[in-house]
Length: 194
Image (tube, rainbow, N blue to C red; front, top):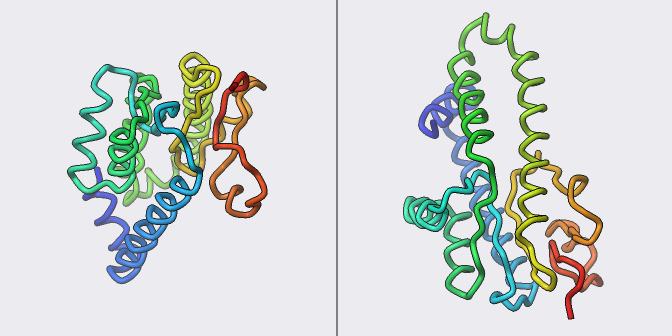
């Protein structure tokens, strides 16, 4: 759907705004790369979790394909895997399919009056689906992150998994880390580390 999103954005906001948007995303990922590097992690004790990556046994191939297609997010994951981090399937495929279908409906309806009228209903469905995804991601992290491991979790800004994680998993957002350099903890660490 990426070409449809691009076309719709350009039609509504203009090509210059699209290019500005693309540059802002590139700069954001450069910043994320730098922040991850500042963590000073032992990557052999790091588990990677990625928004939209299904639990399916094909996660590494999916990540490598998206990295090769130009995704900075997925290029970062490939780089971290090369340093010893382990990729972990993160999301329930059934919820991802529901998310895809909802996004497709939003794009199809974007230009019709009926579609705009149904927007509040779709927003409610999207909020419910996002919470179900957050709960499932948190449960997956709880099941797979071992004591002493650090999890790097790459999620879109609307996600809020922290409230669904058990208390022995400490979560620190990279943007919070930037504000307070005094903290020495990693973004998501399971208690029990020696």
